[in-house]
View 1 (cartoon, rainbow, N blue to C red):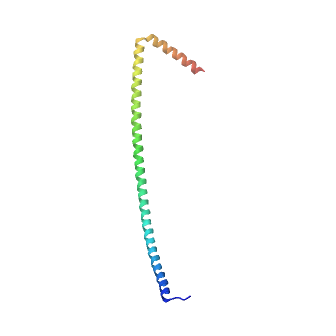
View 2: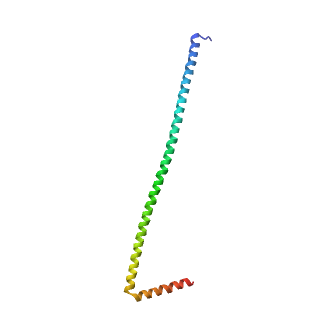
View 3: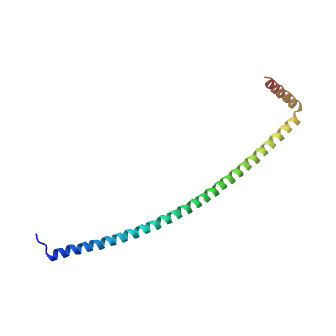
Length: 119
């Protein structure tokens, strides 16, 4: 087997070409890793910002919900108060209309309650 100068030179140039290609690939790989690090850093910042924004949004949603619940509770309290006032007025009218019946009903309720509390 003989080696010609041409075949040795082509093999040597192939090694040089392969070495240049691997250096280029290594440089591209380093650039890609640097870009990847930068992208991850940006993502971290975005997630941190999103977390702060999400917490802020959640806080305002809770405040809004509490405010609505407070308003609803206030409306219910007003409604209950007005209903109790109406019942009180009706009871007063009934007592004025039939005072003897009202006294008899009060005595019956008193007797019933005293029987329950003795046991």
